[in-house]
Image 1 (cartoon, rainbow, N blue to C red):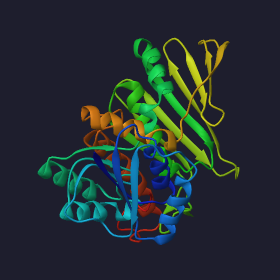
Image 2 (cartoon, one colour):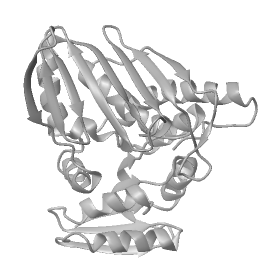
Image 3 (cartoon, rainbow, N blue to C red):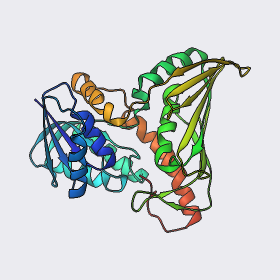
Length: 320
């Protein structure tokens, strides 16, 4: 039997749980959250899916003296390092999956990196677009034609908290690491739906050795919408993730095809990732070390802007 620990049972944690309930292995899953209402949300959402050969227990306290095959840390970013340290102090485990945004400072990233190395733990970060079959197929199409540029534009999708997904996707499709990031962000800070966290509107940009990325998000509409424009030397792909369609154009702007483009929710993905790790000690998600380098650029970009707008107010980058 495999033992899995899920820490954090809120919005994203409960979606992880829905997926884990469908895992094709005999598993013991322990769900931890100090907030009773979060545990109730997770239990309610668990009833929406069919659980397989899995035993699931809920608690407000981190277990002691246990050995886990995988630990999923789905807390908010502000308490994620503390949660990780407490789990590590009380238990043993081989693999870990961290939610994004990974942490709120470069120092926390480095501190966690040292702990992972010290304890011999393999870890990944949940930027899951790399695991979507649709983006894997697109990567195969762009490999020979070489990615030239990628642009994301839309409204109200959460630039600070969700932009990391698109920067990670850019690295995945280009096969290159970013070398720099820039910003042109709002002069006003907006409260996020997450307590103690904030949002910004505007755009961020990134460059790799051979391609460039631009991610834009405004608040002109209360309704979330966005599209991705991905260009190679021979074609352009326009992806609407919400309608789950991709349109392919030639370089003259002629529409060549419109196809379905599957975007699975987290509730249909986590069990696949976990089964990959249990079987091979590897998975499709970016490794911690890969994502750590990306997060350093990302956090520095946003923190410098928060600090520019309100000098001295923030000790860390207040996003999650």
